Length: 185
Picture 1 (spheres, rainbow, N blue to C red):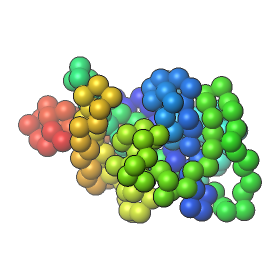
Picture 2 (picture 1 turned 120 degrees about the horizontal axis):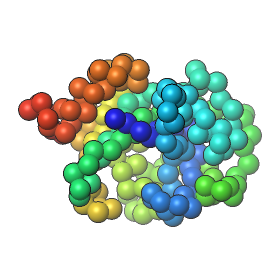
Picture 3 (picture 1 turned 30 degrees about the vertical axis):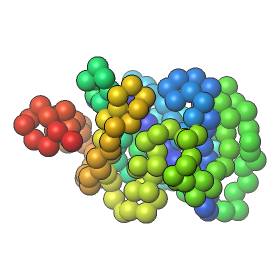
Picture 4 (picture 1 turned 135 degrees about the vertical axis):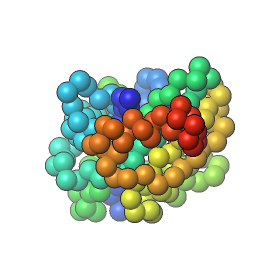
């Protein structure tokens, strides 16, 4: 199952990123998120993580599920996270840089995040962030890694019900893993 979430909080042409102090992606700029606790829905979890990591208290309707990011590493273990976007009004003040126990929070220009020569962000973010920002609907972004080296990312549309429908989620994960003789992204 999917045990993590990640959220990209947008304010105008900037996104609030966290330079992580711990693994995974230690030292890389990444979205805000973490582990889903037992009994939490994906949106409850991302809301809690945003509050814990940033101090921002956002209403549930501020979070838009944009699908999943999944990965397959060297050990052939499938992992994944729910992908969320939250938008703040340009007038919202949130002073950065801000040192927290998780790392350093800072607003980063979208052009900086997506710049082809930027080696400071988690390597898969430039592959799926344009979908999150520009496309309507939800997508599954499946990342294949060899160690920390990103081999490729395959993205495809998925029903928004993926956030709440456990049967659909299970079917999609089986398809990604190639268990049903289906896609095997």
